[in-house]
Amino acid sequence: ITHPNSFDLGTARMQQMFFKTVHAKQPKLQDSDSIEKLREHIQNVIAPAKKKQNWKKPKQILASSGTARALWKITRRFEKKKHSKNRAMSLDALSKALEQMKGMSIGQLLAMEGMEANRVDMILAGAVLFEEIMKILKVKTAYITEFSLKDGMIEFAIENLRNKSKSPSDFHIEDFISRAKKLGAEEAHFRNVRELSEKLFDQLKTFHKLKPEWKVYLAAAAILHDCGKSI
Image 1 (tube, one colour):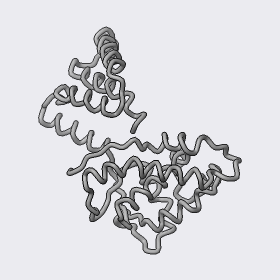
Image 2 (cartoon, rainbow, N blue to C red; image 1 turned 60 degrees about the vertical axis):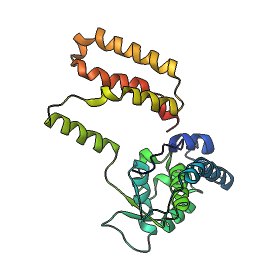
Image 3 (cartoon, helix red, strand yellow; image 1 turned 60 degrees about the horizontal axis):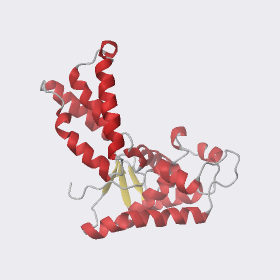
Image 4 (tube, rainbow, N blue to C red; image 1 turned 30 degrees about the vertical axis):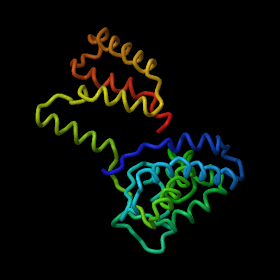
């Protein structure tokens, strides 16, 4: 990893900011003005990091989010070439799918081939975000992985169990604090939540029956619990 970045571009949040909540019977999901405002927002968020870090054109990009996987399913019928083996999604197919989706109601979106019901509320914002990222990075194809962050966490935990090692998370609490502050979390608040959470863990141990080493996971969750607002 040469340039790790976390951007304030969560699809659920952007859907609320730019597209609001829509009714299933509403004939038009969004107008072009809202989409253009979202495009401009995405560019303004990403451009400073791209310029500062002097990003080079990548050979390929890999996406692991649930929204990316949902978009891949939707865009397959727009592909000129079939990429069933390598789970590829072209910019051209994504743009065609987005053009069709932006005039749809939620009911019409749900009827689209490949649409996932749990993604319908954020699929438009996700499509605009993905399209802009591909344009910014100047790539024509993205590859969608079946794996995600949780897979890495599970593998990491299994490896620790095999090695009979304790969780190393306690060595990273200060790193969690630093990251939370960078993501805009209020330090006094998350420290208070952490303190209360750890007291509850200790006072309720006769009920949850967890070993003491599990308390560090609760502490990490308490520190990071508000970071989703920016992610």
